[in-house]
Structures are given as structure tokens and as C-alpha cells.
Amino acid sequence: MIQLKHGFRILDEHCRGCLSCMRACPTHAIRVKDGKARYRAGNCIDCGQCLKACPHSAITATTWPLEHLDRYKFKVALPSPVLFGQFPTGITSTHIADGLRTIGFDAVRDYSVEVGMVSRATADYVANWNGAFPLITVTCPVVVRLVQVSYPRMVEQLIHVQLPRELAARELKRRFAAELGLAAGDIAAIYITPCQAKTISILQPAEEVESHLDGALAISGVYNAIVAYANTRKNDGGGAEEPFLHSAFFLRWSAGEGLGDVTSRHGTLRVTGLANVIQVFDDIEKGRLRNVSVLDAYACWSGCLGGNLTVANVYVTSSKLQSLISRLPETDAETSAEIERRYPCEDCALARPIRPRPVQGSTGTLRERVRTMELAETLRAALPGLDCGLCGAPTCRDMARDISTGEASSRDCVFLSTDRLRRLQQLYLSTGHA
Amino acid sequence: MCEELLRRQFEVRGRDFDKAGDTSAEVRSILTDLGLDPDVVLRAALVTFEAEMNVVMYAQKGTVTFVLTENEVRVDVVDDGPGIPDLELAMQEGYSTATDEMREMGFGYGMGLPNMKKHSDVFLLESEVGKGTHVGCRVHLGQR
Image (cartoon, rainbow over all chains, first blue to last red):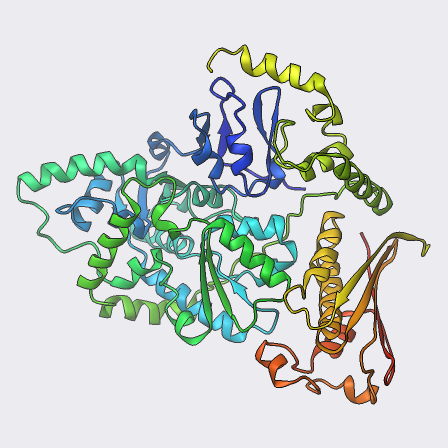
């Protein structure tokens, strides 16, 4: 089994074992042992709920430091459309792009053309599909990992089309290598990301290939520098040049409307928020969701606009983007021509299929696994069913399973062992931060 | 070789559309927890779903028996429904005796039995008019 890379780390020195992250985790991937939280890497889908839930800042996200860029001769930024909704009025898309150059980027690209290509490729993919419905979009990496881990038989329903940022990275390397006479390895394509999960999808794409991107910088990591730069420009009256953004549909991609063709031609259901996505997936499994061709699913309830690495208020971002969209033409002649030219001759399909990553009970012979499962059912009946979490597992069901596999002991349950309560008192009352 | 490793029985009530799908969800969850091949899980869950839907739509009550052996998943559904007068006709794709109400709910496209056969490695259909129907499906586990 391939080791999953993850974007979160628990800092033991800050962790107080308060159970907040364990309770927040939708895939039950956290256990608290001896007063410290621990990940079960196989179950983690990188949604970042733990990071949000932790009251002690004990969970950190992996990002690339800015210095990472120094290794490359030519650095190109590919900003998520979300970036353009982050700044106060008066800071234009041109300021933002130029601001990125001052940080050390040699070029900044919008990927309208690739959004157009992916929108088309997706529509064709849906039209030619003859397997099970609904098909599921792959824009949100958390949704993809959720399917791989918790709904493994639905992986074939993931739309196997590349993401715009990946196509854009592939193209810009080809192009700048030719124009500047550089090796592709000297050129860095860096995504400016609204969330941690997209960083992970670059570190380790779901389809087990190398990403065309070389890294990601958080929107929150570039924000201050852009604001500082833009303020100097506003004072000397800059920002009158050719605007950086040319078309509205690039910005629509961030709002999940970039699917264009697909939404209008096929029955599309947009679902946001991890709990809602899980509920809809359960309904699909129960056969209760019919006549839906495409499920456009996002782990964040606000779509990508409220990603965990953004800065601005999500409502303000949404309003700013809508205002920008209304002022820009839907598309421009140059972008349309470029889509027409490239779409027929570029492969937009994922290089490899996305495979399931089921985690539970997959060790031992079938007979042993059945025995373990039945043992877990017996144990569960003996537990109180209150899901108090004091044993260090989020639910009694998880605890029963952990005991059946030898990863926990029934003596960790406060109802079954008063000794446990005494140990918890020592652990939690003596640390002196009550 | 064919010793039973696991056996579960579920009662399914006719006309209970609210609970329809729960049995197949349970079967799916058990097989997933056991780490079986997703394809096997999908097929076993599909045949169970179609079987329980037939009970919900046509019978007062039925029993779904789920058995796991080293080699296969067995799903047997016995109901007390009206029975099927013409088995050959019932196996035709698109043939359905569903009411408009059932169709409005998204069922009754005449694909239930054909789908069950398609996803089973062994498929058995027995019926007696006025008494009920027995559908038996076997899904082989394959190499693992």
C-alpha cells in the first residue's frame, strides 16, 4: 500500500489532548492517546476540519516556503481565481499580478484557456459515459480522497479529466522552455492556493502520477506582500495598464460555475459542505439519488471561496468576484481562439485512473477479518454507546473496532474501568491549565 | 470450501419506501468493512438493492438472507408477493408491471431482474403465482 502524504502535523508541545480535533474529524482518523492527538494516516482525507477545530493552534499545515522558489531559474505563478476576490477595493487584478512579480515570480498566468478546455472535456466525458451515474467532479481534492477512502466503489464515477491548473502548468513549461531555451526542470509552476487540500493534491495527485505543478503558496502567504506593493502603486497613480483578467468565466471556475456546458446540458447537482457531501454519497449508495448526471461536490460549504488558506471574509470575496464577473466580458476572442486551437490536439484525460484506498479490515485472511468484525460487534454491545470520547476514540463503534484489532484496550473505557478515570484525572488535572 | 463465514438475515416490509435501501446499505457496509474488492461490494450491493426494491414494490414482506463464504457472497430473497406468471417475460429488459406511482418515484423501469442477473455470477429465479418469489444471486469473490 502506498503511504499517503498528508498536509497536517500535530505539535505535541501545544496539544492538550482536548478531543476537539478527534470529534471534528469526519473520517474518524484521530485518536487521543496519553493526552496527545494522533493521526491514522490511512483514514485522513486532508479536509482540515481538525486544524479549524483545534483551540490551541497545535495543528499546522504544510506549505512551501517562499525560498523554495530560489531553486528555479524561471518561476511562474498560477493564481486560483479566488485570489482576485481577496483584496480591498482599489487593488486591481493588475496590482495583484504585479505584486506576485515583486515576490519573485517571473511571470503570472491566468488559466482561462485551460478552464475552457476542461469545461469542454468534462461535457464530452459526461456525454460519452456509459457507466453508473452520477459522475463526480474532481475539483475538490477532499471529495476525491473521501471517495477513495470511504466510498471506494464510486471511484470510477469520478470524472477522469485533468484540472485546469495542471493543464496550464504543463503548457507553460512547454511554452517557456521553447521561448527561453530553458530545460523544463528549470521552470517552476507554482499554484497560489486557497486551501491546504489542493497543496496535498500537488504533493501527491490522486491518480498516482507526478503533478505538473512544482509547489503551492498559500493565498494567506502572499497576501501582505501584494497589499504592500499595491499601496505603493496607488500612491503614484499606477494600475492603468492592460488589465490582467480578460474573461469572466475564469472567475466563475472558483464558484463552481466554470463547468458551463456541463451544467446546462446535463442534470447537475451542486453540493457543498463535507457533512452534506457525505449525506448525498450515502443516498447514492442507497439508490436514492436518481436522474442526476453530475455531482459537483465541495468539502467547504462555501466552495473554494472560504478555503482554509484565504484571508478575506467569504461573503465579501463572493461579492467582489460577482462584481468583477459582471464587469468583464464572458470571454474574449483571443481566449476562444486559443481554446479552439488547443482543445483538439491536447489530451485532457487523467494520465492514470484514480484507484480506491480502502482502509479497514484489510489485513489477514477473510476468515480472520470476519472474526474480527464479529468480535467488534460483540464488544460494541458491551460499551455504553454514549460516544463520550474519553477512551480516546471518537465513538463507541470505533473503540470496539480498535479493541478488536488490538489497537486499544477495553480498560481505556471509563465505564468499564474506574482505573481509567483515575489515570485521566492525573493526566488532565495535573497539567495545570484548567 | 463453501463453509459459511457470516450469515445475516433482514426483514423487508412492503410499501416501506422510506426504509428501502437500508438492507443493501448494511450489506455494503459489512463487505466494505471486511475489505473486499470494491467490484464485489458494488455488485453484491446492487443485487441486494434490486431485490429489496422488488419486495418493497410488490410484496407485503420478504426476507433477505446474506451469506458470505470463502468463495462467494450469496443473497437470497424470499417474498410473499403475487408471484411472476411468466419468468421469461419478467427477465426482459424494460418489461415492468410497476404502477405509475412507482415510476414517479424513479423505480419500475423493468431493469431490476435483468440487472440482478447481469451482476450475479449465478442467478436463480423461482416463482409461484399467488405464493411468492425466490431470487437467488451469487457473486464470486475472485482472486485476492
